[in-house]
Image (cartoon, rainbow, N blue to C red; front, side, top):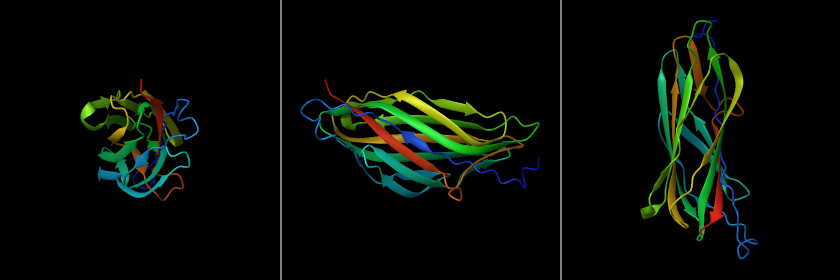
Length: 196
């Protein structure tokens, strides 16, 4: 397989799931999170962003996030949030979708992720870094991270951070590009629980 001619496309769909459990007083309100504009730096670009109907889900469309034949690429995303008063973040579920190409003698690409959530002056939560190593061609992979993220704050402003790294090796490729229908789609869904 000639990877110089083979256009391997990797789309990453990230779903941040943060469950919401309301107490009796707020059960009728189903609180939502206010998301600011997401900002990307490094080797990627955000081309669109939409808030889901539940008020705790954010979809981002990424572009220009790829690594070919030994390249390494990093994407840093920051999203300002306002958590409803009386609630904190409990869980972060992130689903990535995409595709990879691996030549017969290649080591195959890696995809590494780390997450942070800072909540004002009450500290910062750092979730365990995750890495997926691809050993063979996969035209549509799905990788999900399920992380417990108990923030120290009880409502208020915060910032969610994603640090994504693609590492390819000779004969392998990993790409995120909006030319694919699912490419670069990042969906964040925040799970909240009442503060104790």
